[in-house]
Image (cartoon, rainbow, N blue to C red; front, side, top):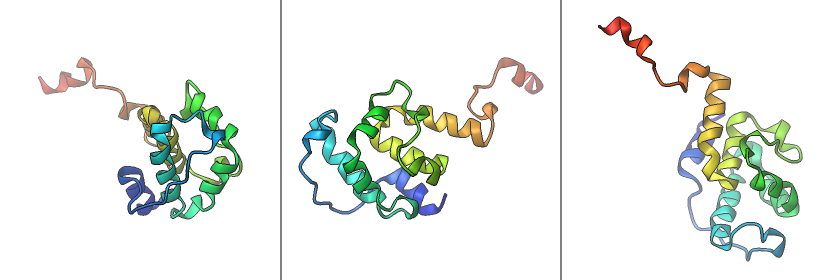
Length: 132
């Protein structure tokens, strides 16, 4: 994970983008969300390991719909080479584009996997006993 990936995750794409009309194959994406999703896909193209993601997304709508429709999209494998090619953090960038409502779940999973469960659990009264 590089600083460019972290910056993109936090700030999203910058600059103007010529948004393409929503193809009928993507009718499962609400029309009001299409522009933002396309803008994010376009911006992801600038990230090193995500070159080609926009064209791949546009050519595989049903593969991404599987993730979009999932109850636990943060646990779904990415289609094509991206599941193997991207690290956990880069996968969160794609999830944030597809299902921003599930990014908190993905971040918790990332923290547990890379730092430990104790970093997402609230402190308990037992852990404050040394402060008395």
